[in-house]
Image (cartoon, rainbow, N blue to C red; front, side, top):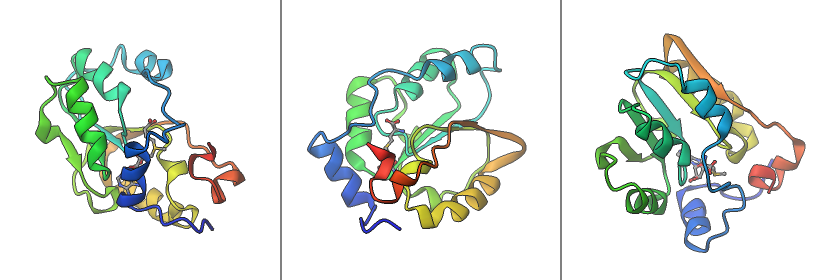
Amino acid sequence: MTKLKLDDQYWNERYDTLETGWDIGYPSPSFLEYFKDKDRSAKLLIPGCGNSYEGEALYKMGFHNITLLDFAPISKENFLKRVPEFPSEQFIVGDFFQLENQFDFILEQTFFCAINPSWRAKYVKKMKTLLQPQGKLVGILLIHPLNAEHPTGL
Ligand SMILES: C[S@@+](CC[C@H](N)C(=O)[O-])C[C@H]1O[C@@H](n2cnc3c(N)ncnc32)[C@H](O)[C@@H]1O
């Protein structure tokens, strides 16, 4: 169990002080490969999206039915500065656990490992409610024990 309070203030401060060691600075190639043949009208969600290079790349590939979600306001400010053509209302500053909607695909990119390990069961239940019956969770879920003390293991 981590002693850190992994709330919106904590994460916002990490963006503010540029302590973002998890940020690879480009879209994960495996997502681009996975989505290259998918229907462009698919409804996508990227929770805990941060700077969201994937969101930018997928939007530019024609996936316009995409919602980005992060509870750190600075992540939205940074994103819209970088990608001004992205519709602002499609980047929600809010808590994943409060979101009500359903999607065809939800992309997981270092979000699962950034929440308190004691919330993992809640994450699984919430994901199920956010997916359409045939919807898919796409990504890599890191469960390394280091995450117990260091969010993201970085
Ligand atoms: C390790 S960062 C990963 C950011 C991004 N996915 C990436 O790969 O660069 C985790 C992100 O999840 C966000 N986050 C953590 N808990 C959240 C929650 N309950 N609701 C929304 N966003 C959350 C943080 O603000 C942070 O931007």
